[in-house]
Length: 221
Image (cartoon, rainbow, N blue to C red):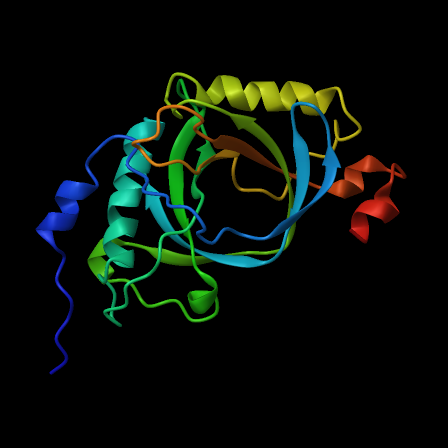
């Protein structure tokens, strides 16, 4: 009989800290090309890539991210059917499903980018973690950087700033209608880093909304 890996209580103690994401230097991130850049945002073309996703129902972005990463952290520490330990990557991405409420959300998906080694064959998570693999097709994303900690009190404002910037650019009518998410928050920094923290707001965009504006250049970038 195959012995299933057990969830470690030591891991539970590690990940209950707020803004807990442990990010080290020289770790893997999804690859992209910058196809348009302005002073306060840029448009990236991401290649197809795979993530492990933790669905969470909560009103609070911070609580949802903590809950989702709690499960993802156990997964990468070996709580999977292969007993595999998986290297940390960046960013940890929290996607907001549109809805009512102060954060304009009804649910969240917290996602861990899978390293190259596991992109095609990720280890199967333990059932009790309620995780699911997620493949993100090649797509365009509008990105705005912001510093400090990503909180319930500032993520909506940062998303609104990105929307305002897009409305004043050639990408004004290019917000993707195919996306299931209002926006996503990408967090890159260690919880112990106070100065120079890096976060981003991501919004899916569709270059077909540009009309003839440099479309051929973007399509071949």
